[in-house]
Structure formats: structure tokens, C-alpha cells
Length: 457
Ligand code: UDP
Image 1 (tube, helix red, strand yellow):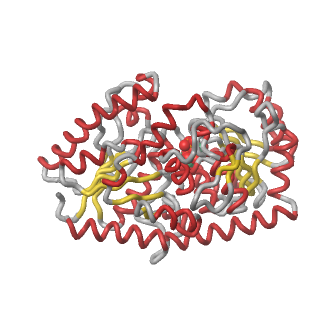
Image 2 (image 1 turned 60 degrees about the vertical axis):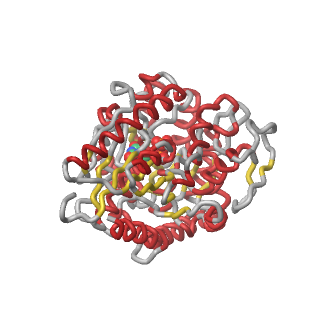
């Protein structure tokens, strides 16, 4: 181990953009407190990255599919099984290699989807820390699926689900889509499996903050000693700039940074709707068309991220005619810089947890259009608990129509009711900052984690 570091964490993310981003940011924070970091992405994930993280070290491991990862495996079921078989070995080899070269690891921080990592930690006598990339409410729901309290799949569409610890009543439509849709067996199994082996982990870390989810965090704490350490967004956006800190720095897509920022610089304050559906969601062509017209009819300026694979679904002539006056469409943007920009007035989002937490941390009110996974639950919280956004409702065909989109944007950006939402956005931004400030709820938990690591090393 280098003489300047008392502790060395090996970080094992699940190979998805939304799972690796928060783990990388958490790593940087640990690093700023004197912990050495080595990130262990899969070889195939590393190959697809357009932006590599600095200043952490990277040592890739094999998931058994070094060329194409999940795509090469063909299904989640095959992929997850093989990743476990191969990962157990390749992770062990990496730990041994780091020992041999005088740079031993003393802790593994792992995504609990890869719950087998705790076995590797035990084998080598290392500290283990499960890092949940979803919020505590979503974890509570998966926990209750695991315990059989929520039956799969729920029978009625609008059935009320009563769960202890939640700060609101939820219905079937608010639970993660993998729970409510019968055909997602393997995905639900994968997420419920996050709780297998969890009692063996020395630490359970959650990318959320106490003030945001008090009731559920307190309730879950009776079962697992969960510690909130978020929001894990880079400290520079929380006015606590760390040396070498910059945008996320671990991206599968190349952001069109100059184009976005130059364009935003020309727009009036709070005038722009920023639209993004994250790294994975695929909208139907009909939905894209409704969204395009909703944006156009709202008469607001808009910056819309349409990944290149989604671009063919844009209505014909949209880019040349409809978007040219008021809008900019890009294939990927530096989202944090965008959300932080003074011209942004609203975020039309799929409500992925990272995007939601980023909007909370930067005080941007939301219009939500959840697609799948935990997005319906995040939406429920944004609208009914944190009251900093509004859900654009689908029709019976599952499409959000242009009038609804237009109306929601106007409500959030202009109307009286929007005042409350905009006021709450400011309040949550403040609370997120406080949580990460010195002595704040998340900062204290991170300090405790680091100081324990330092004493055992
Ligand atoms: N993101 C980005 N540029 C974009 C769109 C998204 O940097 O143009 C980042 C965003 O800041 C977030 C992540 O990609 O950190 C998306 O994660 P999220 O959990 O919101 O959604 P997912 O991609 O997992 O569906």
C-alpha cells in the first residue's frame, strides 16, 4: 500500500451508467478524505466508456463476456449467473494481484446486485460495504417483495399497498415496474437478491440523505444498519469543490458540452425546459411525437437529449422546422452543468434515481414521465411527498399526450400552483447541501465509514 494512504477501497459497480456514476462520485469523496480507490468495472463496460474517470485507478475484471457484456450474454438470467461464476474468480485474482504488488485492498464497496462480492471480501478478511444505488423507499419495497409481503404480480391495477415505514400510501402503479409487471421475473429476482447476504455486509450505504426519507430510513434501520451517504453528486455542484473534481467523468456517451452551454448562455433566466430520459429508456415513436408537439406547443425554449439510437423516432422535419427556433436537440449533455445553469426552469425527466437526486440537489422543479424500473416510485415521491414536481399522466394507451405535457410544463414554470413546487425545489436543494456539508447527516456517515476504515488498516 502506498505510504500516503491508510485505507484502500476496491469499488465494484454493476455495469450500467446509472449504477456506476454514484459509486464513482462516492469514491471521489472517499479519496478526498485520504482513502485510496481502485475501481473494478467489467472489461466490456470499460471498453464502451467514452469518458474515463480521473484521478482514481482502474483495474477491470471479467464478467465472462469481455466483448459485449449483457448484449453478448443475450439475457439477464444468463448474464447474472455467469458474472457470479467468473466474477468470484476474477475479483479474487485482482485482490491477490493488488496484494502482491504491495497495494493491498482492505475494503470492497460493491453494488448489492453483485451480492456474491461479500463472499470474496470475507474470504480475504476485508471490510465489505453494500452500496445501494436506489433510494430507501424503493429498497423498502424490494425488501417486502423478498419477505413475501408484496405478492407478485399484484392483482389489481389500483390496489393500495400498505407497507410499514413508507411516508405515503402507494398503489400498484407506484411500485417499481419490475414488481408490477409479470414478465419481469428475472429482473425482480435480481433486485430482490440485493437482500441476500446483506446481513453479512459490514456496511450498508444508500445514495440518499436522511432528511429526504426520514420515516423509511428509521424503519429500515431496525432491520439493517443502513447509512445514507448522498447525494453523491460531485462536490463542486454543492459549492464544496474538491481538487480534480469535474463532471461525472465515467460516461458511456460523449457529452456535447460546448454546444449545450453556449446555447443555454443565450437563453433568459429560468426559461428552458431540459428534457432527458437517461441512458436506457426507449420511447415509442408515438410518444416521441407527442412529446415533440407538447414542447413546441408549450412555447418554451427546450434542450432535449435524444440518444442517437432514439433519433430516428423524432417526427419528420422536427429538427429542421419545429425545433430550430426554440429548441436544441443533442445526443448527450453534461447534465449537471445543464441542471445548474441559470436558464433552466424545469426538468422533464424519466425520474431515474440519479436524475431525480441531481434535480433535488440543484433545486430544479420537475415534470415526470416515468418509464420503467424504480421510476414510478421516484415519481410518486417527487409529486406527493417532496412536492417538487408533477407527473404528466398517460392515457389508457400508455401515452402521455401533447396537451398534458404542455399543461404540466406551464404549471411548473408559470402558474400559482407552480410557486409551491418551485419553493419546495429551493428548500430541498438547501437540505441536500446541508446533508453533505461538514457535520451534515450524510457527511457524518461518510466520516464514520472512513475513520473506521483507517483504524482497521
Ligand atoms: N446523464 C448525462 N447526460 C445526459 C443524460 C443523462 O450525464 O444527457 C447522466 C445523468 O446526470 C445521470 C445519469 O446519466 O447521472 C442517468 O442516470 P439515471 O439514474 O437518471 O437514469 P438511467 O440512465 O439509469 O435510466
